[in-house]
Amino acid sequence: MPMLPPAFLPFWMEEGRDSVPPSQGQGQALGIILSICGIAAFYASLYAPSESGQWGWYPRLAKPSWALPPSFTGPVSTLFYLVLAISIWRIWRTGAFRTIPFTLAGFAFLLLLQSIWSTLFYGLKSPFLGMADLALIAVLATLLWFTYKTLDAWAAALWLAYLMWVVILFLVNTGIWWLNG
Image (tube, rainbow, N blue to C red; front, side, top):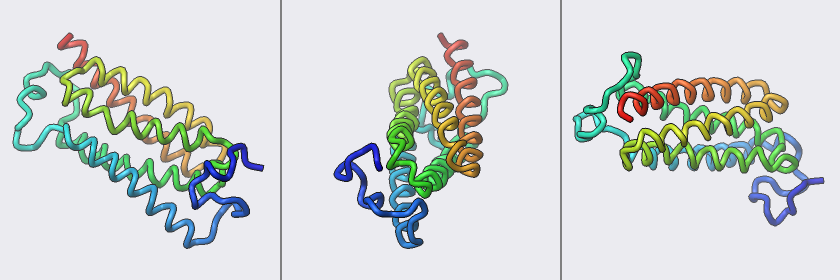
């Protein structure tokens, strides 16, 4: 019996579906999840520094010697939107969204936090807000990892890789905040 009334469930989670829906439903769900993550990645890219150096503020910041260049972090962060999509799709396939609302709500909130980081850091020029956002992401990603590891080993492994990336970004962001505070 689902914890949420059927009216609150998206169309691909209606009552009577097995834990692993038919392949057509899987494809539709994967497409929807990839689209949502793609939109979030696109929004995040709006404030990211450009290769041509159009962002005068970021290059002038003092950075830790081990800080990763934007030419590396941008593509890797984009790749992790794909990792998030595949991971949450694997969780969706377990049927957990019907019985554990946190699996979907937590992911949605994390995706929002992830997509606004570049707005906070680059757009508002605030390493502190970026650091605070990444701290929230790290806490939420950890809670979700604990939830996901009981549901799907591959999803949890992908999520753990994402969590490690968030920790690296948090450490770099914290170093930038500390050096420029």
